Length: 139
Image 1 (cartoon, rainbow, N blue to C red):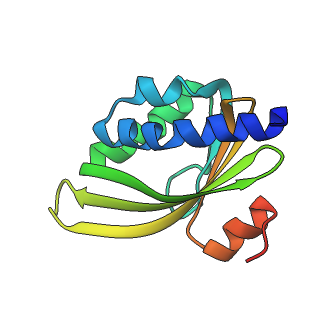
Image 2: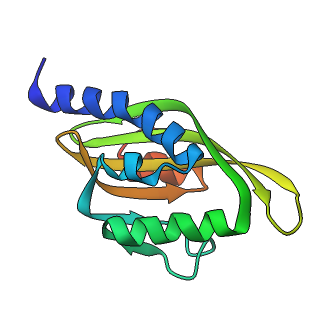
């Protein structure tokens, strides 16, 4: 197996565990698979800033979300390799508002860029077609 394909396979093997750890609030476990200088990009409508840097920035974004929600669960449904270094995850996110108690489910698309088995960039999309284009995949 070529080294690039092996790296994406390792990344895809890590991602389900990372999503489960996130849903438990185990940020340290998730961040262990992220580069210390990684960039995490979210839609501008989602947060006050759209780009978070490094473990500290990503953790801050997640902590902001968990401070607003009683629970925030991410369940990956599908992983699509986008060689040479990307994986597109189709994810169902379920959140429950802390103040309202209301539960909502949203489908998001997470494009991960890897250097070897370590994620160096993550980008969240609400639009499937935009995520596929960003990954360089035909819809």
